[in-house]
Image (cartoon, rainbow, N blue to C red; front, side, top):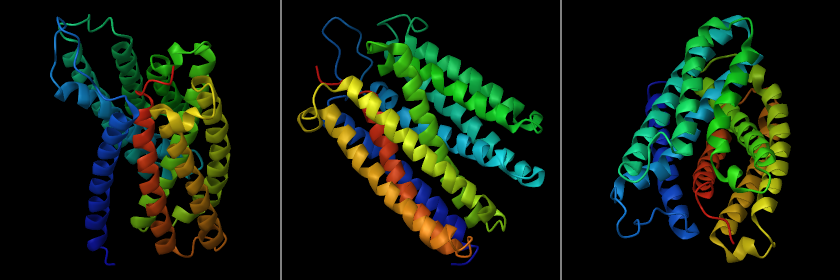
Length: 314
């Protein structure tokens, strides 16, 4: 494939993935029971558009979060010269994250108009707080050259506000649930984001992309363990019996997400055997397998978006 063809193919893949995320999230919301419904009589009806946008836009917000944390995580172990290029990517992705948050806030405001105080909504306050933190991140990226870990800490801080106003606050131990979910999201985002950034560098033919491959492989292995453990804890806090994995919409989404994550472990083994072990001398193989991994990960993101809005079994 020529250099001229590569950007168009990549753009087509990104567009296809965006459509897949939105459509999968919508289907999972409908089948899982978390789809927006019409309000009771006497309550202002915002129509179907804004509630549905509010339901699927978190997937876009998650995608921009993942890209940001990927650039920031890889930059931690990069050289100063490499960091400059990665910081540009981190700045653009963090600005996209702010835009995604703003779009969701606008849709939520339209949905709440005439029904409840807009700023009185915990979800709105969480979005605004998260957007403010991400805005700070976009401003300090170029000024924190000597302390790349600061950027990573800010990204984690930006995750917390939207976590604490979600399912975590409805559990018996909201603080523990918030910590578990934050760790789950951070680990999954570092895993997916790191892979996305390395694939981006390989497609752009940066000769130093493979220098970060071994470090990413260790990060991915650690992330898999954290994602598995925190996911299990979160599932146990919402499901009373294993049978609910098959008898409830919430459980079915959890089960499907678990199956896909297990498949991703297999993809990781392929990368370690055919790319990492060969010291990155086969960029096309890495990009091919990474593309398959990222496609499955996109479906997982959509399922996670639907899961966060699907009521657990009662």
